[in-house]
Length: 155
Image (cartoon, rainbow, N blue to C red):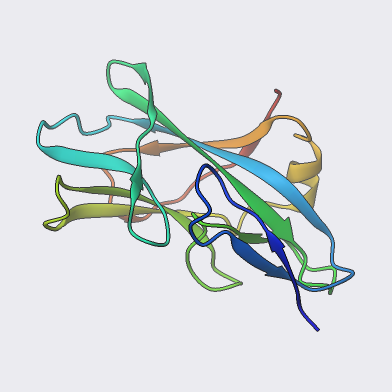
């Protein structure tokens, strides 16, 4: 039997997450630092949720933007590696990713998407950042699925 609990970021859009009773679950903050981020006027660049809405990032420097979101990590009740759930987690249970999307303002089309895989995140990494975040770096000139190295960051 699956149980439901509310989980979301700022808005309750797609805020219902189903977890197996008895499974290991924990909240995780995910942070992506994008260097060489596109700064084109007339376009949007951000973290895409399941509804297609774009969440803007925070400018870290002239050409670097940071995106953050919360997710729930669950072991699906079988002791497996984390499966990420929440409004920003895309893909199948074994191939979750975050989407950094670059598109025309007003929703008239996508220029590109960067898929940031979550599959290399382990429980030991999550445990190493209980009040902090897991962070990775991505080159904003990339597109498609990119290789990433996640690392725990203190609060």
